[in-house]
Length: 96
Image 1: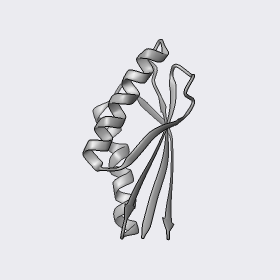
Image 2: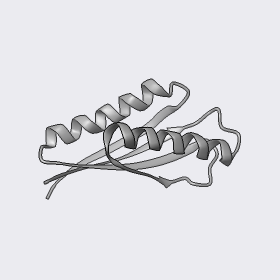
Image 3: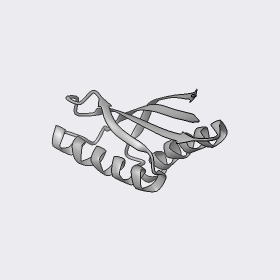
């Protein structure tokens, strides 16, 4: 079993309130969850207006496939939300 985990830090320059941020993050998480069938949640910087940390995980039987899924998710966010900047992307592949 292979577990792929990632933490993505997003910069949301258009947000001017926590309400704006939550609406955007909720939308991103729902779209990623539906498109890639991964577990995803906001894991940090909950009280900052323009910064969000999202954690996600994917379980697979291949480390190559698990890594590709994480990279596709990153590209998907960049392409579908050009108004958001990915300021950090950390990933780890764990062989169980």
